[in-house]
Image 1 (cartoon, rainbow, N blue to C red):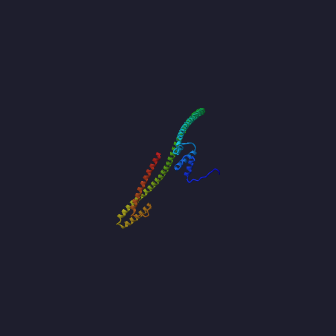
Image 2: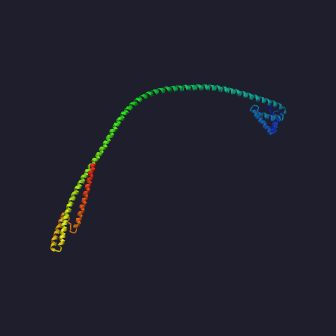
Image 3: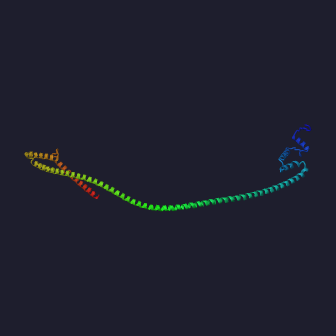
Length: 316
């Protein structure tokens, strides 16, 4: 390439010294701190605009070496201050304008919304009024229908009350009749039960009468037997006494012995005691007397039972 020269530098410091000599940079940038400030100044300038950071960097970078530009920086700072104030006033004005614009917009929206709200409320109230009116008409119709129904129900209630009165009278009459029938049935059951008891008592009385008759017959037989036995015993006693008196006489002994044997035979036949002996005659006499006493007691007991049965039948 023509007109282009390439030169090699041993260090960055030599490169920056050449740039300072050519008037491209304002400082020689011998230290790393100077180079860092210069790099930050270039980096800040790439983002555009002049900020306070750039101003401080320019002041720290240029003024120590070139005191002639101090006045220019002071003017530049004053101009920047004026610009900032003007920008702040513009921003305040814009802010106030935006605020008023926002207020006007919000007021317009509020008025429109309030108007729509009132319109909607009015429409809602109208709808509610119409609904209430329809409900009123419906309620009036229902009330009229209910009144007619009430009149009908009152008439039906009167009819039902009359029918209920007649039914109560019929029910009372039926209840009285039922009570009479139940009482008659209970009385009939008692009568049937008493008749059955009376028949049973009659049967028992007949049985007791039969038993009493049998007992009386047995008593008569026993009395007859006892009387016969007593007579026989008396005869035997007299004969024995005679036999004892005539023991001394052998001839009379044989006669008395034969008589005693014949009397004993007769007693066996009458009393139906084939095992009767002269030694057991007294014992058999006591036995017959005890049987007679027992038969007498049974007869008395049967007579008492018969009297109680007759009294019970009469009371029933």
